[in-house]
Amino acid sequence: MKVGVFLLTADPATDPAVIAKRAEELGFASFWAPEHPIIPKQFSTSYPGSRDGRIPEGAKRIADPFVALARASAVTTKIQLGTGICLVPERNPLLLAKEIASLDQYSGGRFLFGIGAGWLKEETAIMGGDFAHRLTQTRDSILAMKQLWTTEESEYHGKYYNFPAVASFPKPAQKPHPPVLLGGSSKHVFKRIIEWGDGWVPTISSAEQIRRGRATLNELATQAGRDPRSIPIFAFGGPDQFRERAQIDELVQAGADHATVWIKSTTKAEALTELEELARAVLSA
Image (cartoon, rainbow, N blue to C red; front, top):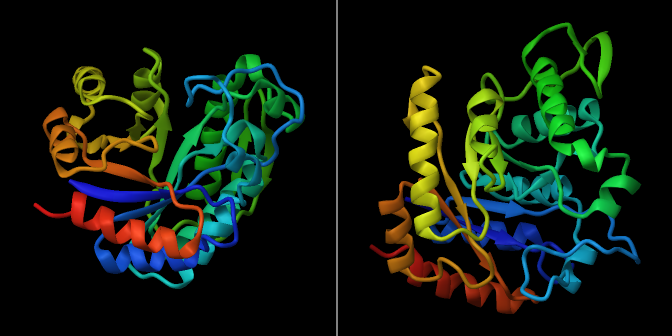
């Protein structure tokens, strides 16, 4: 079981370069950064990650994930670099494909493309996404990016994105492209993973929920002629999840391949201390 860390890149005091470098030295396998380009001052959507539905203050100050991961890439050599998650409907796929390919090239093929369609209706609308059909839009964007990543002359003709033959370089270091890891836990997410994804990122899920998801993925993959072992599960923990080795062992038994632990500290010194404590707690056998 690989274990990574997630940093709410919301404050210069927790520099992703410093945290990712130390995480790699301690033996963590991955470093993840979130995305919220903007948070509207007025919104009615309830935040799914808290009991009271309120969005954390830190989420309003999140840095761009690709800038954060590029900074982390420059001071590391082995640790994988993931978006946890990228809000695909809020980005132009031609620009996003180039950002991802560039990061994957510069990092030596270490990028993990964790994606989501977004939960904040007002944010999606401001950023140009179609909230009501955001999952269809996400699929359209991913298929367009796959063309940009894998063909010399790339063109795509879909519902949301439509462009003639273009040159888009560099290509990703990973072939055919970085893994596309879908978040979410609805019954439809598993079908989407089989159809156009590469892995599952269950967020704030229990070991039992992951066990059931693993069984569903295995069944659907077999029916589609895909090897179930080629579809990894990245268990993405909330602030108080997966912070003990026993919890990590439960995830292994549930069929997860990778777990991510949330760094809760908001200053560099505290975050580095927390990293040391987490390494002792979750990386030891």
